[in-house]
Length: 97
Image (cartoon, rainbow, N blue to C red; front, side, top):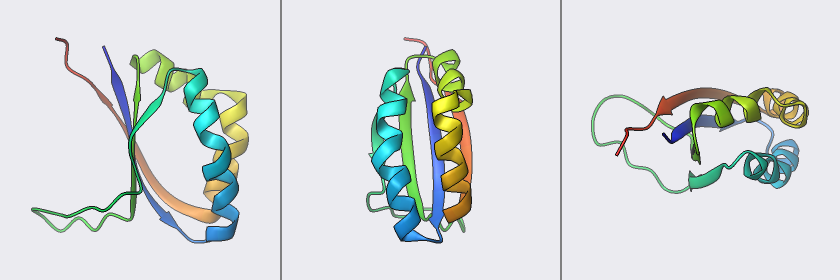
């Protein structure tokens, strides 16, 4: 069953964030991740949510998502992200067909 990583990223240092953007897709792909949305236009239809840069990545299953998130190659990039952005990240398990 698919699993989704959903992130709301407030970039505080765009120049430093460029390295993260450049390198993170290859790490996700190694674990079966693919982008469904990445920094596109958003519109809040209800509530007081004020999203920044939204990202949605689909993985084949939750296990793959968590393996990627905890992988050594992502930990280096995560440290970069933590220095140049404030991020809210969550996972969502998909529905079975």
